[in-house]
Length: 283
Image (cartoon, rainbow, N blue to C red):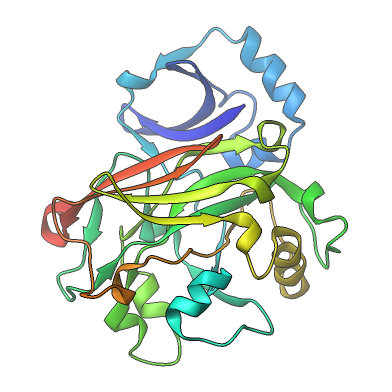
């Protein structure tokens, strides 16, 4: 089952994707985050009997599958091959930083190359979506807190990222990242460690990483993050990007207006976004 957020006639909705339609689930719960905390079978039964649906082609646009009250925890340098590419030592603990919800757009919505930089880099990632409240979660129990998975383009503005020891500036330009196109629930992904994350730039594969290559596994990440904060339904942990990023290529390869970057994860979906300029996006 796939759940999404979308705009229709200027209003925000959430629902269940069925073929080429979205079954609206606003009567079941006010937000997608609230819905993720519900029993999946209840949602499925409701969606099977609901009469209100909208064609995917008739919506205004897809939104990132995360509500304003949720948080995005991003993990840096979390693939063994990316560590080698970056010339770094293996980390002893997960490198965690936060991104604002305003820094993400949904699938098929333009991402924004900042006017302030020409070093706008692509990053394909798997997003783990939390389904229930938890604090100090053990690795053994961690997967029981996962509602589903989504695709993340956790793009970075590399020069701003390196302005200081904190990466916040380079990771939080408005509309610079993307997430979606939906949340695919765990019942469709029996073994997430078997997933492969693919990044395509203008149809060329530039990144390809297996989740089995993660330095810190999904259970380890959930356990670690939940030691310092109480995870809530709808929170997302972006698990890190594989090797192949633009700034490590010779010559470097950065995103420019007109480029199309896609994040493809088999069984979850494909997130696709064209790159536009800051002025065009903000107009």
